[in-house]
Amino acid sequence: MTQQTQEQGSATPTADTPPADTPTTVTTTATAPAATTTTATTPAVVTTAAPPLAEPRPLGELRFWPRTFHDRLTAPLPGLKAMARFAREGSVRPGRQGLADIARLPCEPAPLPPVDAGTVAVTWAGHASWVVRIGGLTVLTDPVWSRRILGTPARVTPVGVPWETLPRIDAVVISHNHYDHLDAPTLRRLPRATPVFVPAGLGGWFRRRRFTTVTELDWWEAAELSGVRFDFVPAHHWSKRTLTDTCHSLWGGWVLTGPDGQRVYFAGDTGYGHWFAGIGRRYPGIDLALMPIGAYDPRWWLSDVHLDPEEAVRATQDVGARRMAPMHWGTFILSAEPVLEPLTRVRAAWEKAELARENLWDLPVGGSRILEQSPLRSAVS
Image 1 (cartoon, one colour):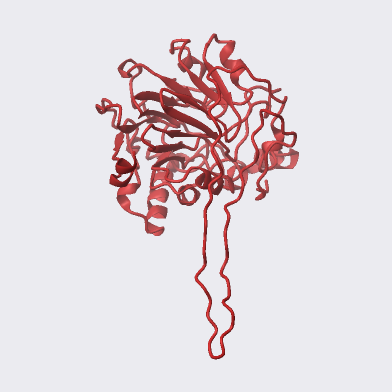
Image 2 (image 1 turned 90 degrees about the vertical axis):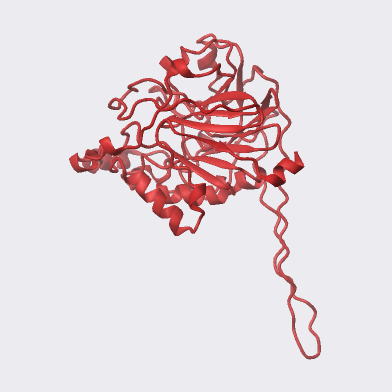
């Protein structure tokens, strides 16, 4: 699979389709007029005019979408030749040596830390499931509390937060419809009035299950709940849940912005590519990136849709996030890398990039961290 690098939006824009991200305005080095004895150049002037954010759309708005979102793919899906190669040489599970460290996977379930309405806190429940508390809301990302999902062995670490210990869930965000991110048994535990924020084309799945406040968004669109802004942003991935619905719904990540301006970026499931820089331009000052680091081997098969640890660090830098919390590893065995390798590699990549060690929040399953508000942001808010 060859990853494309040109930004793209919908091939057939409609009134409900936002424009593609616009590039940062950059003024390059200018040469000063020549003097009689010397030639000087003025310093480079760089301006970063972020594209304007979309006005929030109404909660629960009923919308109509194209039948497929194939035009949003940034790399072609595997063809027959790739399928044949995978059947011949592909491996979807680590060998015995790669599985030997399961007992060493970090897992420390603990109660959620107490917070107030002005505090941002994150707790890793495992895989891509986080309990994010922001602006007084408790938000779940891609909640999977099931022991097993379709097509994979049972989880190798327990859920980091027992369901019965959760506070009231104020909202749920979904990145896409793959089974390890959209888990029907878990979602059945929620009251049907719980607001859910989902990609374009996925609202019907929730309405058929009688959820009453389902907000579908396209890339770069937003909605607001109790002062917290939910922006849906692009990712390098795809969607499929049945044999006949490939790319019938969109995929992406979420930027959650609290009333005081603190921002948490949940990347969902994604490969590496140009969208990260676009997200960083549009949402400057991201405080924390929840970034996937696992399910990347064999690389020739998964590079277009899953970050490896080094790419995750690079993507965090691209979006301009101050901190990174790894996810999408140490829970379900979805690919062939040794189970502890994502953690060791991301730590090495973070050190190689000469980033502050305290800004890598490599939490155990069940671990929590509280985002301290910077003095500058406190003064502004």
